[in-house]
Length: 173
Image (cartoon, rainbow, N blue to C red; front, side, top):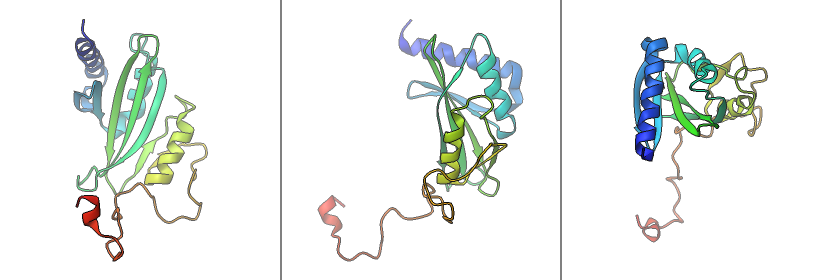
């Protein structure tokens, strides 16, 4: 089988198992940039991640990465969390995404599943303000404890529009 066929087969296998066990939690699934991607409802995220880790066939035992997402124009799902899981023996990787409304940034912690989530969740709390319920020590990791902002949110312009010392034509704009 080609790599594309392997990725499609992995997507179909994971999707079938998710439909069998959590059919009401699946929002969508697709293959994006050589990764099977599953968008799931927040209410079921902990149970699904636990299932993906503990299922003998899937065995996504390693949390490679977790990051916050911010899409301010998507009303009702302005924020999200993306988990990248890896089955090392088979070299399978998938992405799981879930979205949150801007007025309710609570999601269960997964530190009981993967110890590495501890620091990842603290980072996303610090950068995006996502609150991981049940986290053993949810506090800022890089910014000052008394900071009143979350620097990765897209609430601020990338550049200072009041600057007069910069000529945009020099930058191809």
